[in-house]
Image (cartoon, rainbow, N blue to C red):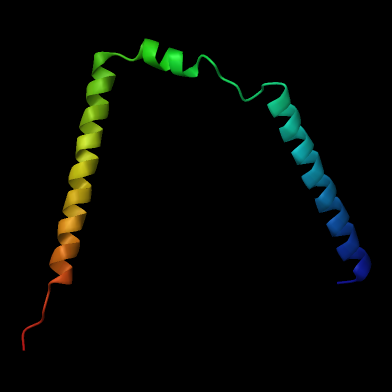
Length: 82
């Protein structure tokens, strides 16, 4: 590749990176990422079935992790016959 192409690529990528940074800073400054009602709405619209499902999913996750741990221990203690 020639030097001119590399310089052009660096210039364009630096410009695009600076443009993205400016857009991010503008968004933070103007409050584009603030969602004040997110947690309130989540609590307001939760019902008992959703909470039960969440508890059940958490229980299944713990059971899977426990099973994986036990399987690892079995593999770790495995010794082939002589």
